Image (cartoon, rainbow, N blue to C red; front, side):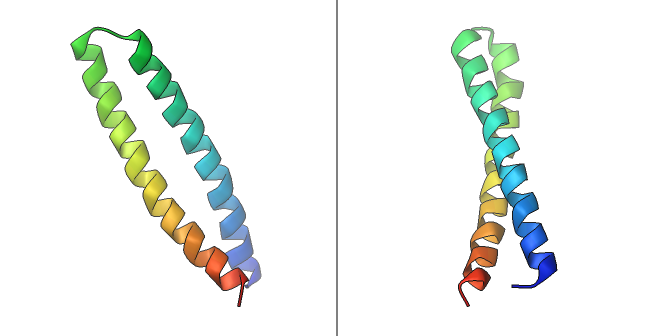
Length: 69
């Protein structure tokens, strides 16, 4: 694994941690909120976070695979 790949892996790990914190905060907001108009944007934001997380996890897995070579 190259230096740049190791650096990217560390950055991805930091970003994934941040996304997980954001996801948890939104899920907590869902439990508190009953107003439909406020729930809709939360749902969209949660969907976006999930999509971004999944994409970054794929890159992370690919980089981790390079680490074992």
